Length: 315
Image (cartoon, rainbow, N blue to C red; front, side):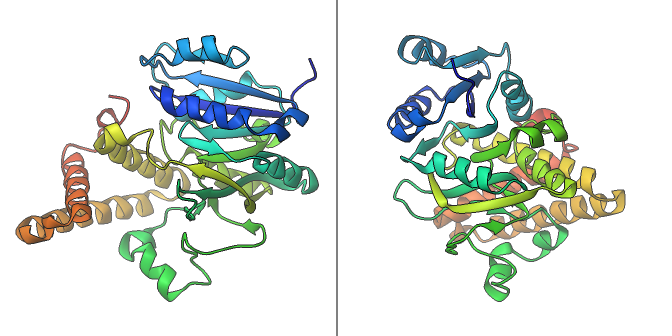
């Protein structure tokens, strides 16, 4: 067999139906038949029939099942060590491939050797634009909402509805669909496994840019992302896990003084918002506001309990 040019690595846990739809969408992309491709699944100990489905209907897929949930970063690194492709495409199981789009990404990487990482335009199911790149977490975002910054400083802060015709160098990319040059992944030593879930791709982008590689949003390629389907059943734990990763990220990339100020501001903000939403119950008619109350009250009490890692998705 010819060595693959592309390795598609998918991390899953109990997302059998989403995976099956993703596999079918990959099979419908006939352009991949001209591009030697391998698909690698790292299963974080699913119990929903994922293993049986793959072995019966998709035996060509390279499948590994972990004895326990190792999180995204560790599992992604494990998938990389099993891969052979020059380019590695990390895909969420809640994505769908559109014909010819992956090949566009590979061709772009081939033509631009200093691009270490690229990501496509993510789309909702209705083909609406989804945020496809991200800004590095900063103290200013805790004080001023990003949506307001996007409104008053549109050239500096681009919103998710911004349309781009050309590739854009960005601070970070959304990890739902994330293509990395093999030598870059090797040089950086893979994802930092201290991040169980969330922000491992942001940390990776920061390190890639510091090493001199470009991090590029490539809007000419498009992939559907069924946003949040993989963690919707554990929403509160997922939000706590995000905060766990956020604090690890800030502590890693900033001074201790910056870190403590960051934590204090988030704690105060979660307290104020929880109190305000609780004393004005008429606001809770709105579903979005009710969800915000659930989020901020959970984060506030998590802070009171000492910001324990054990309260996230590992539990």
